[in-house]
Length: 31
Length: 257
Image 1: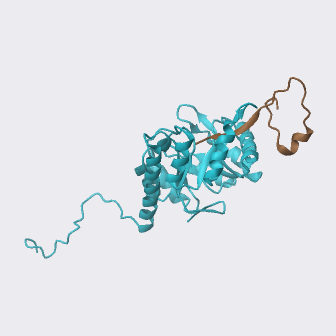
Image 2: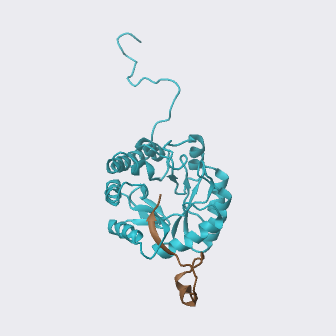
Image 3: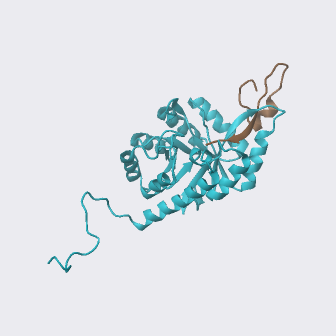
């Protein structure tokens, strides 16, 4: 959220507000 | 059998999953390589995209163990954060730790690497550090908690093979009990065979397979080379010499006494 990693166990403590930027991570190819 | 972090591995070939022409070719190459470990990475994905999930489904269908990497990280903070994210996404304590220090050669920043390895090992990660053949750095990484080392053969994607034979031999001799995996720079199956013949425990290949004209055939060739190299090492190769030694006995031949 807003460039900071939020671990699963910490998600309930995060209250999203208008304007927050949320990014989702996904598996990708890697070497 | 190779054992890394208490995990037995029957294959000494680890395969990267990037730069293949298609997911189908990647899957076929993984099967042809008979590998048990495939490296993966992370990326940001918007809510509408689901490409990452498709890739993840493919990897899970292959039944391989994943080794997430921190590719592209240039600082300790980036690498440690990426490792945290990878542990959640991939549900594994394994992490291939890369802290890049120089963009032309992608040479690891061994100072940042050692610091990140110490942090992650203390947090319970099982760290696979992408490093150089430097003996002192290797010692520091082991002190930091690493129980496997991944020295480069040559710069990533260069296909040059084992650039520093003297250094790599010294590394192998200096740490006889530590699993050593050549990571990066191999271009041909003969390079992989040479690494195993020198006593390295395994190799990690990506570009040499993925960018070959026929990645599936090349994956199979690397699998055979790794097996041949390991078998040759076990068989005890002769020492190289500067002068000839007749293979046919000369005593008693028709023209010599």
